[in-house]
Amino acid sequence: MSSAATKTYHCGTLTYTKAGLVAILAWLLWGDFCFTLMEIVVPTVLPLKLSALGAPNWVMAVILTTIPSILNMTICPYVSFKSDRYRSKWGRRLPFITLTMPFLCLSLALIGWSDSIAVFLKIHATPLYAVAPATVTIVLIAIFMIMFQFFNMFVGSVFWYLFNDVVPAQFLSRFISAFRIIGSLAGATFNWFIFKYAESHMKEIMMGAALIYLVGFGLMCLFIKEGEYPPVEAEDLRESKGLGVIKVFFKECFVDKLY
Image 1: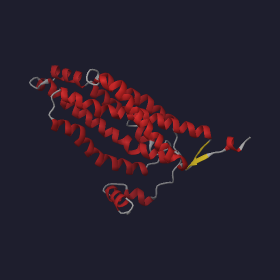
Image 2 (image 1 turned 90 degrees about the vertical axis):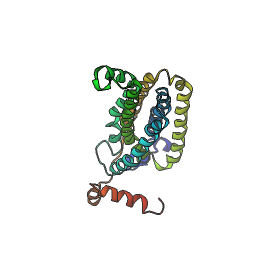
Image 3 (image 1 turned 45 degrees about the vertical axis):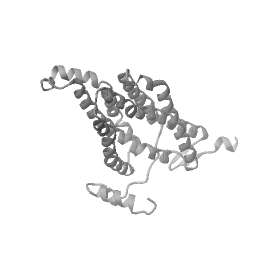
Image 4 (image 1 turned 180 degrees about the vertical axis):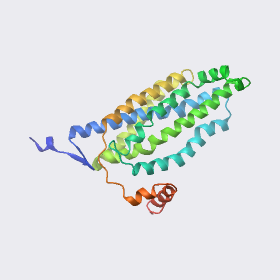
């Protein structure tokens, strides 16, 4: 047997053959394609929908920019911190992705059905009789948007770290390059084939994005395995509770001159 056939690659406790390495990289890139398609839908389609409903510019800015920024500044650091110190038989990254997957897909679906839900509430909720249907829809979109951004932060906070945990270091730079290319391809696919239907078929687009994420990204999570990680030290466990989380986060992120 040739040496090329038996060559293996390592990342932590993970060991890959050449075929196994190709498979793991393919699944990660496939997951990136599905994830990017899902993420690009909301900030691309919602501005058109909100504009059609007559939402003021400041309302659109709050829903599409301010709320996501606030969640990114708060949820993302916390989830990242917890993920680093989390240990389970499924890994330390994948549980944060898979456990929030149903809720993220649900929030996407609710955004798509916001018009229908608004009509239902107008009929059955007496206090809303005097409220304009467009106003009810805008409020619902804002609520569902907060839900979507909240659960999406759990994915965005750990997905990038998963690469470092499962991709051998000597292939990481080339993988990130391919990752960027696939992300651009996903964006181009959406803009070329789907965006023209954004105003007329928002419900179908949101449902499709939820389905692609659930099935496509879900398959990636199913076929990717994390290795074993060193146990968390007792001091880290003590500091990761309560306000100690904030103290350690700022210490680790802002004391080192590199950061």
